[in-house]
Image (cartoon, rainbow, N blue to C red; front, top):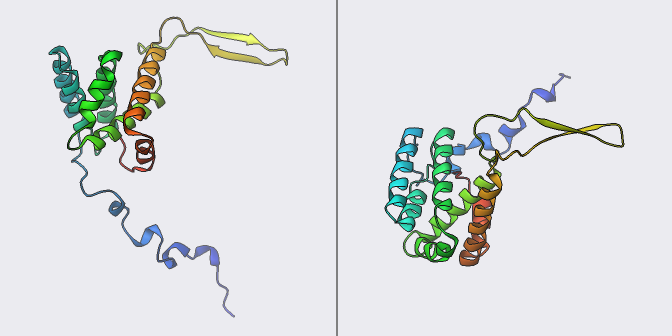
Length: 193
């Protein structure tokens, strides 16, 4: 009787529903935009800043959501995230509902709402912006157990708390307007921003 080493058999090749038997690219939607570079995202950010300075926050938000780099590289996505956060921080809280209703209504409104929800979650997950220099000061607090706990000190270098507050306000208004279905669609969508 022949010895068969079962560890060398690729069992995924025997399963008709395994990922090796069909291309994973077919799982992505066919309407993905072409890949965006970081310079293209920087051009969008410049256009959005001009719209904000011109007094058109609704148009700026609509434009930045319509040009999301779903197929771009990581640097393009970071630049675009910064542009989205800049737009959201540039809109006063009293205008949020009116602007959201304008952006989320009409043709493509639900896609823009879902895209905004993606950016809100990505902004909440991103580390707080800093000046690029890490604070060398750390405080070490001795514990009664004999271990020391090292924790960073917030010496006015942050601004992350203000950004989080803005993002949470936008999240609240967006959920009021679109419902929780937007959250579910964002969590299950394979296209990332």
